[in-house]
Image 1 (cartoon, each protein chain N blue to C red):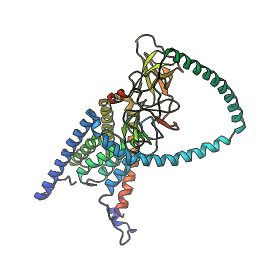
Image 2 (cartoon, helix red, strand yellow; image 1 turned 120 degrees about the vertical axis):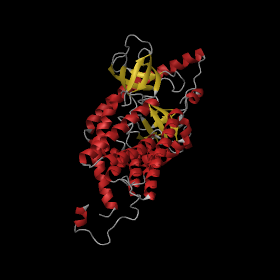
Image 3 (spheres, one colour; image 1 turned 135 degrees about the vertical axis):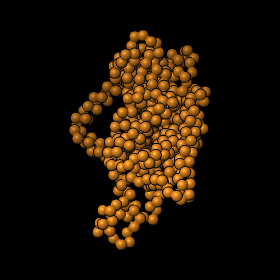
Image 4 (cartoon, rainbow over the protein chains, first blue to last red; image 1 turned 30 degrees about the vertical axis):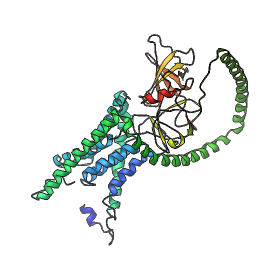
Length: 173
Length: 284
């Protein structure tokens, strides 16, 4: 923060974009729309992009959007991805609540703690997907979630970096 | 949301409290929706169909672009070694012609035998022909997006096949696109039989693009590598005699097979009416 304020490159008249307050939520819905890509893949190992970007924003800032926005964004993610309706609503809202509680407890945060937090949340996401699929009649061995879990955890830093770039753009930094 | 202690301001304290309440309400509403969509999936048919009408056309148009690009690359590749390919294709063509003549004779004989037995078969007409333009690539379930919907006559429960083999069945239908439960999904159980010998078997997806095949009668493992599995028509949902998969690996009491219709490569998918219309009403 201090470093950004001291930088000399800042031009006069350069400020936050006009819709800066809705940009974070818009990027989450836009990444949910990645489900419309014409990828016909049989492994199911791609990450849940919308969720990665959601926790990317929430770990970067404590107030990217009012907390309850997670519910409608989750509903959009369910509809666009074809998940059972309500799955992302529960998961995303619970994630916002959990991270609020974590924020009250942690004294300091660094890169590794954030990645660890994200890994735990992604693991919860994958396990929940596996459990709901089992309820719907598709019970698979639990070890089938390992490859997508590893891929998602490795993809998180990239999502975090992209979110940070979008954040700087929206604030005109 | 401000999560630090809001200080003495009563207004800030209340807004923090209500934001927590809103989150808890969101979780409860979501849990209710999730329970409903697991227990009574039919309740959300209209909403899911409408969502498909948003993503389906996007996938279709993007699919056109990627298919054209891929076509250019393979088209250029075909010119490489064209003379060698030409000779090979001529030999294959000659072999095919001999087999077709044999098959024609068998069909004619079959027709005569059926006429003497007075058997009548329901003729299956295709309802719609579309392309598989997308898939559930980030979930343990195996769904594909098909580029035709209710405006083309597609209804939930109809079987989908390609010229190579069985693809799956329709589970969600929007006006412009529909969602297909592939045969490689864990929840898709297809009554089938071995092409060699006609032993009845059950095919169930493994969620990773392959299929588990189990014999109905416990005992000796009847499978061999390279065996073809075809639908038996039992249950009345899928038409009989549609090839499903080829066996690639044997295990303790069954085998692992690969679907003959690879969803990533099928040129087009054909939606057919349920083999026995009464079965479509029961299918989930």
